[in-house]
Image 1 (cartoon, rainbow, N blue to C red):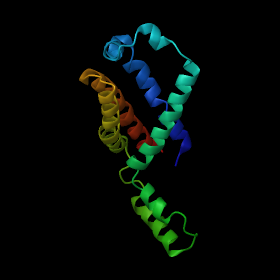
Image 2: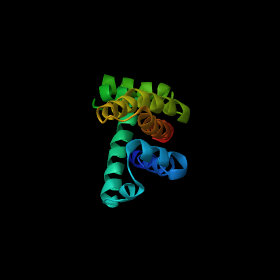
Image 3: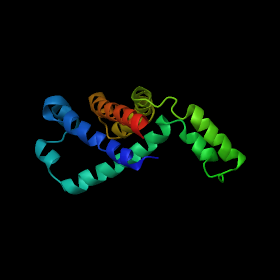
Image 4: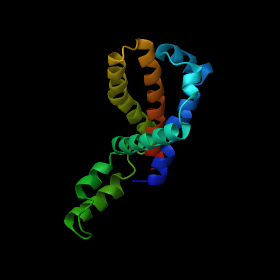
Length: 160
């Protein structure tokens, strides 16, 4: 677990959001689909909003870490075993042989994108349906999460 990389990856949704929800990209479409005015979008306690958004993005980075880096499963199973034990010896040999397998930006991006499809889309879609939002609203938010989570997975897998 590389916490500095997770903290950095948690910035990705913030940066992507600044671009994606800009009025010249999808911001105007989002405001129309959600019924939010520009004044409403700029109101509120921005320190609290961005602080909580970053905290939630860190939680997401933490989750994507487990999805994109397959070797974590071995540490979950055997990592607590005492040094010198049979399990520890096996884990050490396994990591020497396979520790860098599938540790690339592309592999992590694939898992981040899949996570967006199987987690973000249903979450955004369900909430949007009960809020009586349209398909355009769902697509705007899912597009944002797909890009953000794909990049997060890539960065985490490559550098964590």
